[in-house]
Length: 350
Ligand code: A3P
Figure 1 (tube, helix red, strand yellow):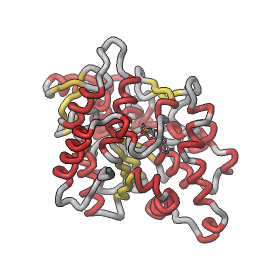
Figure 2 (cartoon, rainbow, N blue to C red):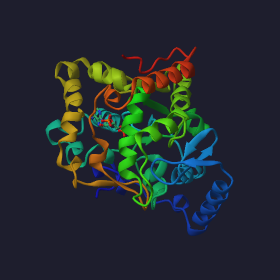
Figure 3 (cartoon, helix red, strand yellow):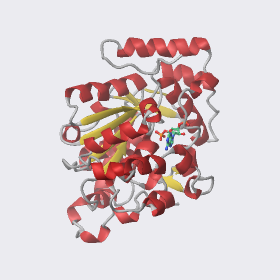
């Protein structure tokens, strides 16, 4: 099992350890107490992976990530150069992780011998929501060189304003019907064997009611969409479907937004196409590290997810194999209703 950082990206030895950023035992106990007190007073409903999700500030979150969120608010030091990859679950985090890492480090590594090929995209940079709870996380984050990259599934409104007002965010969203199908597959695999499985019909009902980890889906998307309209220099809003249709164009947008636009020389040398190819589903999913038994990521002390679980079909429109016409129409109706007057459209393919 790999740790969450590609070692080459992490100059651990360059910075002296600062004692005030290591959480001591008393601090951990206080955080645990606050977390338990909070959970005891929150409304709860059925979760897809574990037993319950909790309703916290308009979103449904698992116990683990609520703890992570409290810790982010208390202990995380955002830096103005930080770039966050944000997405609702199963909307393209793995793809964007690879693209952002490869773009940022394109002068550092050869594409034929790239750390993504050995370690896979999950290791490229930390998933803040739960990695903040791992041992020495804050200390390790402080040691990363700027610009630091982090991933999160938290809704825009849940994050500290010190983060959302200063840092850049790349947000990727997807047709909610495909997100639902992808999430149901993923969570069914991670669901505790002690709990009864969730049928697709049940997942559909929960999803439509907004009850799914990090949901409601539509509020999540709208939060980032509105923020991107207000501050386009701070939030780049991407769609999985556009990336599939024209990855080269979307990658150029991404590089420019990250402050590292491709030069004409790089374009002529085929660097854009090299990154697209390196990060493609076909390339990444066939790597040993992303095959069954190839390795996994420690999300919390208890939850380890195998890398191969992040690769399923990688297609637009797989919902057609799972949703009835009635289900499709219902989700499209909710989407139109929720997004009306926002200027955003999602998933309106036949
Ligand atoms: P499917 O389940 O529809 O196949 P996330 O990375 O946010 O967890 O999202 C996972 C979804 O993205 C899965 O969708 C997965 O197959 C797909 N995916 C993973 N890597 C990808 C890549 N490099 N290119 C395109 N899709 C990718």
